[in-house]
Image (tube, rainbow, N blue to C red; front, side, top):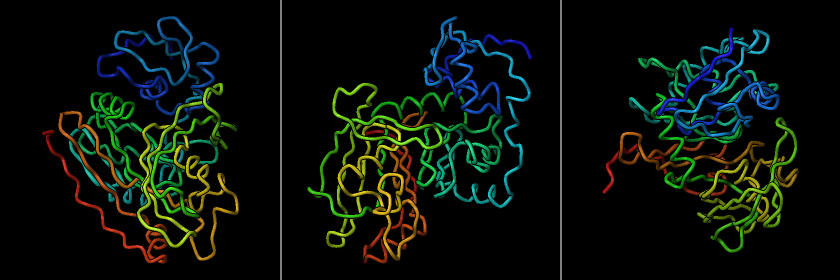
Length: 326
């Protein structure tokens, strides 16, 4: 395979470089992409770049030849048929441009070290009549369940990626936390910095102005609480940092139940599942064709059971709604 000089099309504008590369070299791992960028084998208009660079229409991307040993097939082992069927059954909304899934807790969004089964590796099951397999436009942590958006074309991917980068998308999460926040509602404005490697990456709060820190803001509201022992929170991230909600909840002194990496033994309580109690409940986002798409996802069994055990009444998810703007 020879070096390819790819001219970025208008409908690819705004894509991250790593996603563009995976589109043209299926099977590339993130580790390989990082190495190719670091060694200057991937360039944009002749310049060195990093994997998170957003491409612009008309730019020329150098895509080097990838040896067979590096570009492993996307499905080295085929996902279980049952897992593929379950994925299709988890579609909350679907049209010609968008699919919204209810991602189960425990399923990784993308592959990595020690991850044999992941959503990105099963997206062919959601191709249906389309010519292209759907694309991820955002991610949820492996332990987080709930609404996750896929784009069914390059056009939709560019529009949705732009919506998620800005503040045009409303994201509402539900979490069961240990303790009671004071005050019961407010805003967490706390910068975060990543620590650790890719397999054990976490984020920690740092003072304003800290080198490499990322600005992170979360609105929160207490929906119900059991004394001062547990609280059911509604979380609205205004920025999209790695592990933002988990780090912010822990910084308030109310870690998310089941979140060992951020609270150790304090994140667990007898009688409750030892899983992360964080759920992407609701999305309101601009549809690529205009209008607004609103989708809610019901709680996973472990989180519903925990809330019920505390006596909280949880409403069922509303039906998806696609409406034109007023």
